[in-house]
Length: 299
Image (cartoon, rainbow, N blue to C red; front, side, top):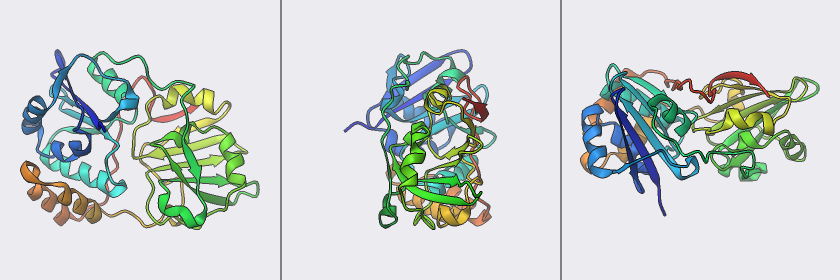
């Protein structure tokens, strides 16, 4: 089974594109080595490529722009909010002075900011959606929380499983599925995605720790007449008690430490510096691309 990753290294004038069939699960800890070591590692372990590939096949990617000192990434292989936030905190130590960004629009972002060719076959309006509304006894499978403002202005929450961010493509028909489901009082683990719906106002607020390639283009077709406010990884639109146990920086640092093996062990000192700092979980700002991955828009 392939776990494909791509990387782009650019100096603002010339861009190199790299591809690996196996590197996606370790992109997070590979990047911890810092800009100089990472550039050498990518050139040694990835194959040269001519374009960015179809988004559905790429599970992790990075843009390294040495002229702007910009590092932008996304990955499907992080274990949750704490892991992802700890990764950003440690990258700030090993990439000092660099602008660290999450590519919320995936390869669309990387193509827009590097100018490299991208595969024209991206997510389209016929994209299949894979998700399930879970019974409260099945919430160990939940990776998403949907909250809905009721007619009496109270709020109910539901645990869902979705394939990556398919939840955001479900459309208003999702409300019919939720109406027949049992609300939850909280999730057992902090989710990867969240969606708050207010049917009376026809508004949606979405957040994610993943990437949402094609969301802005497809939203008007999937949710006609609904306005979307995409909040990147800011989950404050949903009640803390429904989101489940709050993620902690220490838990994320523990995950990173466990993943550092072999020649990836060098960043341990940076991890310990972050641990001693005892800071809060940092949000991960996104790139502003032609696909409008941040802010509000009306379908």
